Length: 221
Image 1: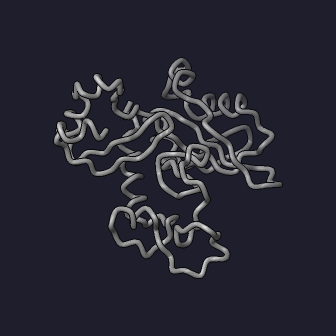
Image 2: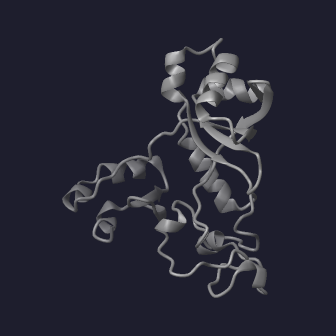
């Protein structure tokens, strides 16, 4: 990238590691287009592409762990979606992304990828009806975060930091429960912004920026 940046003449707001490369954030769409069309990238063997669009997601709360994904999706279609969406589209677009529950719990939350129309109808209703249950549902948007260095865009197994950092102050050598330092958001500190808040705060400016960017990736179809 050092060989490319001087000749490209673009304002780069952020560069971060991803699973298969790096993500570059430019200051404008025009500059993003310059990066996409840069021939120097090809000469260096670098592939440049826009982030792929992702389907909207919903989270369904307190689903019994014993309920199979197949049963869940069959009931989701027959009792909630069938009246406005064809089965072919449902099978093409809908999938269970993940399931999570607390240790020892009999129920857990299910993340399901849908399309825009299904997401809007389900969230407007606020409930989905499965078997004899009515489960609470809402839109789900998440930001990929590493819980080793607390930066965005990669997971712990992909992290380049050697030692896990303290969630409280962002320094190595100790964990949050033993930290005596003031609260410092590592992400905002690296951007030169106000950082006297938790790195896990939903009010964190950098988290909000990443969340907004993730929302822009969601397909409108």
